[in-house]
Image (cartoon, rainbow, N blue to C red; front, side):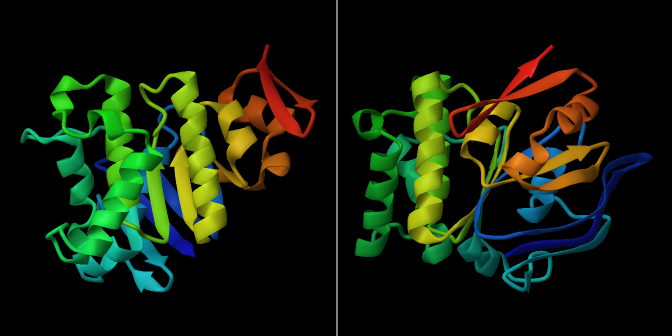
Amino acid sequence: MIRTDAVSKRHGGLVAVDDVTVEIGRGLTAIIGPNGAGKSTLLSAIGRLIQTTEGTITVDGVDVHTAGSREVARRLAILRQDNHLAIRLSVEDLVAYGRFPHGGSGRTPQDRSRIERAIALLDLGAVRRRFLDELSGGQRQRAFVAMAIAQDTDHLLLDEPLNNLDPRHAVSLMRLLRRECAERDMTIVVVLHDINVAAQFADDIIAMRSGRVVHHGPVDEVITAPHLSALYDTPARVEKLGERLVVLWE
């Protein structure tokens, strides 16, 4: 369980996240909202990438801002939206970084098992020995996702993980996240701009605007024409295609 209690984040006079209290349980939760809504800031605060101005954040009862770094990293993995490294690494070496919270060597049988699993899940076997700067944007993105998965935590935070992915790999990744939730009883939180992807794959939706959570609940309760039209200041229509909700912008 991830819980934020009255969390705020200010940058000078700008309020990026404003008094957010949410509980995020097991399953796949998508955070949606317009540009500047505070989605990435909230995710970064949960992942301890930034300090909050006010409030507390706990993961299974552990305060992420007072616990030790290794303890948090064993519970929580996060993929940022912008991933840049100052050193030249191969795909395999990058994925191995995900094992550092568990000892740092990446050479134990358990480490190797998790690394191999992550490389296979993200379909990176053919490029595992290539350097990151030799890859396409989509291949690099999948390598960073593999590193987060190799960390083998119960909680996974992904900020725009579909960036640079073609439709095949985007759908494959979302299906993978669904399987991870089901098979490993994980909590996965994903910031998404594609509302139809969120509607198809998420269990719950957090809708943010102006730093606040305006809706939080199951997909069919949040993905409605009135909610989306107000959230994005754009007329929306929501249709049902089989068991799926499809959003059309008018």
